[in-house]
Amino acid sequence: MSEPETNIHVLDAAYKPFPTFAEWASRTSVDTVRWDRYNASLKEKSDLSPEVFGRAREIVKRAAALDTGAIEGLYEVDRGFTFTVAFETAAWEVELAKKGENVRPLFEAQLHAYDYVLDLATKAEPISEAAIRVLHEEVCRAQATYRVMTAVGPQEQTLTKGRYKVLPNHVRTRDGVDHSYAPVDVTPSEMARLVGELRSEAFLAAHPVIQAAYAHYGLVVIHPFADGNGRVARALASAFTYRAISMPIMILSEHKEAYLDALEAADGGRYELFVDFMMARSLDTVTLVNESAQDALAPSAEQSVKHIDSLYFTKGGYTHDEVDTAGTELMKLVHAEFAKAIPKSSTTKLAGKVQIASSGAHTLAGPSYRLPLSGGQTLQISFSTARPAIANITRQYTLSLPKDAGGEDDVQLKRANANDTFIARMDELFPSISGVLRIRVSLFAERVVREMLAELLLLAEKTLRG
Image (cartoon, rainbow, N blue to C red; front, top):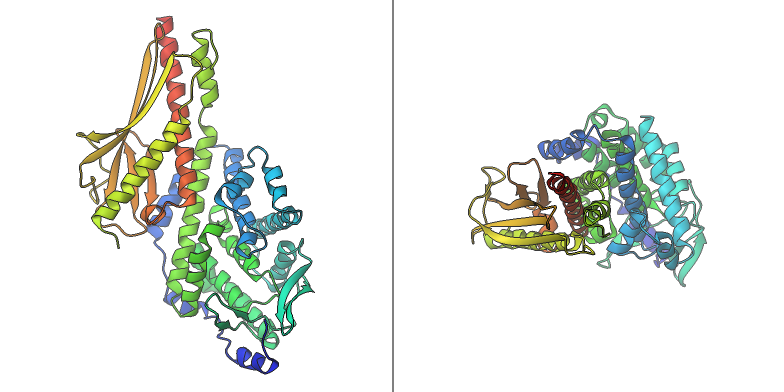
């Protein structure tokens, strides 16, 4: 940064060391009931093949690895681009190349860093300074230089990988305020202290989200490397969720403002806000893995349509109003995704329809839920086939709204008489719909349509044989 020489000592003196883990733990908590409930949905699918879950976890790893560089401003991404690369959809490599010749090497280095963290977590080895330095080497492997603000303007300097900083790296924040990191001469002792905390009995016995948040925060407070500290911190945090649930924490570029706000709150002693942020991102990861795994197992819509067509010898702190608005927006989003997911048959023999209707009969998610103030709403999806293979199938999902909604509470679409419920947190819906939720809704709609078409095919074939 551009600072007079005399100010370096002032900034060094202003460094505020990271808290002990005992202090951190005494002022933070996680909703373990919620954590267990989300992760139970994955355990219920223990009969799924390792390949299915491996693929789902690979998606969130790729998203986390790509966006960790974008958060640092190394390149720009948007929601569609991130998930194009994460899901490895058609032409993802072409889209990645369009971002610039240096983006793919950076992305691959960041992927290797997450692989290194996974390996570290799998071996259950204690975190060490050596491991953190290797992690820095991995995450910055494709980065030769970094930009430094000097008295004569910005300059590119060689980035030494795997070694602690030899020059001060204090920064000027978004608000134009100088922020102090650990002075060069105390960085080794602070890193030794951090690793000591990460090896303590109290830390090792703590909840993985508490562990991830503390390890991340401690490292960024010190800022031990010349550059790449944020990327190292996010990868390091994932070591603890990898150990607990075999997946990283997925922090996307769209979370950047909330992420920085939570870190600033922690700087002010409000550690719980950063823990809450990391909890939300962990649950994002769990729900996306869950939905991706279900999507991978759902029958192919194209194959079902093809077989149906073959029967005819052709081929084919909110107000209640705000809670209602969130529910309405979820219904609209799900309706739109179902409308897109319904295949357009090449014949007139297959008809599909999705609609939102007022509901007389309804099934609420539980006693803590209510119907919309305007009355029950039901999303109905139906398919039918024409003569002679007459068959039809319908599914209905009732909207349930939390009576006393907080940001962490769920809006639910519950299918009557079936264990099939789609949930969305209020903070995913209000004040705006999150990118992760849009992806989950799309996967949910595609899965339900595939399942229904597979059932319809069996009914149609039975009618034709009869």
